[in-house]
Length: 460
Image 1 (cartoon, rainbow, N blue to C red):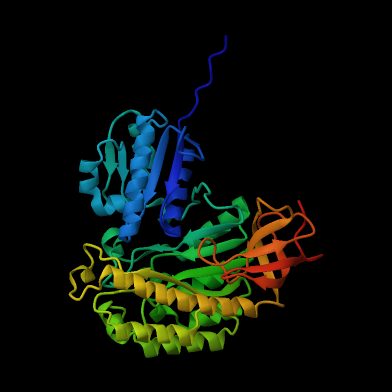
Image 2 (image 1 turned 90 degrees about the vertical axis):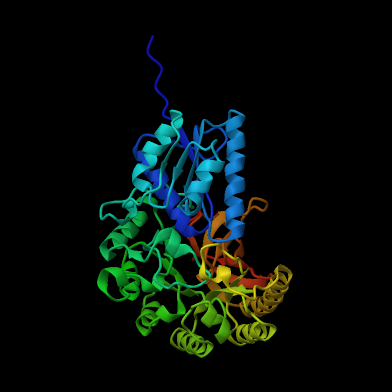
């Protein structure tokens, strides 16, 4: 009788937080696959689950801890052999977590890529362990990078840097991830080309803590415009979009590059955080409303079709009613195409945590609601303006409830955070297909339209 084959242990991943964490999760899984582990889609039934956590704000901390406790419960039920917790939560609260969660079998900080296979193997063997000191991440090496995809095959996130130099008073990222650490341009371009060649990626989404500062630490000056221009030359890439820019780093050179390179989406994610000068000063944003206006005016003059996304914090300590009204007036004037808002979260370790004049929770929520009502009106106006237009749309997936109906996005829509296009089609379409769509209707933040043939991608 032949011996039974040895089955490799299986590992699953729960990735929480932002796309930067998602890239790390793909790197963890890629290294584990290289080490011989199988990758399972579901935690229940896998041998080991890794929970890659976020701890940027209190809501993220709660989600991370709740997810860990749910995994621990699965382990108690015999549906898992081991639980490993990784990422920002571990880096920020390592001592407390190790003490309070003895059921967890392994802990990995933000730079534990090089040891994740060892940590997981030791967890399976019942040896509780942790990797909390800094390690050179595989992300920063020049050779080909192993990533196991957690996104659909047609788009991927490309992380170009870690850490940040800005020192915003509400943010703890530099304490978790340190100062700016950029990857060399050649390494970034090589990985982008690898994603196209091996996964068939058509849309690349460039991320970092502050992408506008990319290269300052390596080259002495920002090189984000040069990087974007080089990425735009990669054969096979149809769309490239840039996230997480600080307004002070949006240079004329970057504007020109976005405008002139056809592969770069006329889309920019540029967080303003606020628009009242007193609040901006307390946030240590080192910018004024007048400077914000000039940057936005120049962006729209240079790139007329630009879709501008921003993020705003309401209820920051010392934000008076007058300051909030000033913010509302600014948002109404500028009319961002895309806007995400957050209530201020007092994070221990941040400079603003000890600021006086903390805004009560109920006031923060009221201001959030007022801001989002205003943005809803702006969004409805802008989606209504799209009716009758013919737009290029990338297909993300088929509608599970309607045959020949698909969910897609325009170049003005980033996955997960922006709107969708509900596409009706006379033929079947594959995820990743680019199709021309006649827009016939709009919803609150989304569009509805009909695919135009024969310009659609080949049917399945």
